Amino acid sequence: MDSQVMVALALSLVGGFSTSLGALFVILNQAPNLKMLGILQGFAAGLMLSISFLDLAHNAMNSIGFLKGNLWFFAGVIFFALVANFIPEPTLPHSSEVKGRKKSGDEGGKDMMKKHRRQVFFSGIITAIGISLHNFPEGMAVFLGSMKGLRVGLNLALAIALHNIPEGVAVALPVYFATQSKWQAFKLATLSGFAEPLGVVIVAYLFPSSLSPEILEGLLGSVGGVMAFLTLHEMLPLAFDYAGQKQAVKAVFFGMAFMSARHMQFDSRHRIEWLTMCKA
Image 1 (cartoon, one colour):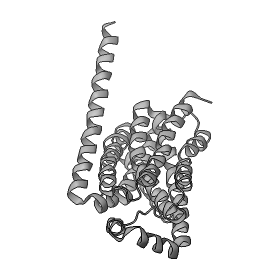
Image 2: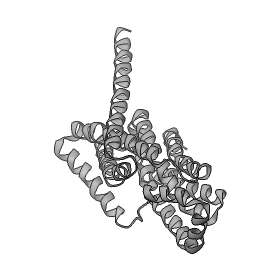
Image 3: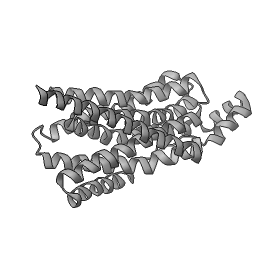
Image 4: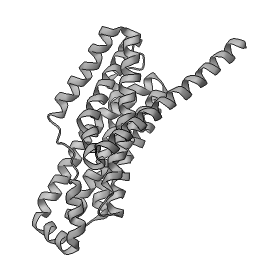
């Protein structure tokens, strides 16, 4: 297998296994800290927005022109908006429900679980399917980013990995409450993340490694559109719900500042290497 595909596959596995971390939040603590998850989502949203607008879309417009770059970007937005209509939304219980579960005690939780065991388990299965479908285009995005360069692929993988932790919670939480099986909750959450490396494998055979620079930049612009839609449609509402608007907004800008610092570090290192080569 091509080394570029192997790198993209490794990066996508990091994102895929992040759903397992989300499952650990659940099986180690039946009432996970949703505020912390909301802040984490806000931070990931900041990373994703920075990558989408200041990296992928920006580079596409500079490389292939403002008009073409915008067309590719909004093609990605429209594509994922259409896909999202057919994907079940991954949902966590509302934070007030979790607090109420804490106050009601074990007996109340058991009574509710007995009444709604099948429905809760079914909702977990539907959520796992929905998240698997979400993770598939994310794997494609990581592969296309890796074709551009390791830095782009690594940044995308990092943002997606942070985004996938709450998705693992969304799968594991209903399954664990319905079955009381830690293994079942962990297994389904982990399996839902495997769609990400699967997306890498499939897109590696759809797109040849010898793509023209213009097509590659256009596809990366579309990836920026997909990531922007995903962030605004799913990540920010979740962050606002669980962390509160003020804390979530702070986390978003902290994530953007973190990504900007990474860009500055890379650019400085790149300039030093270029100057060294010129002197040699």
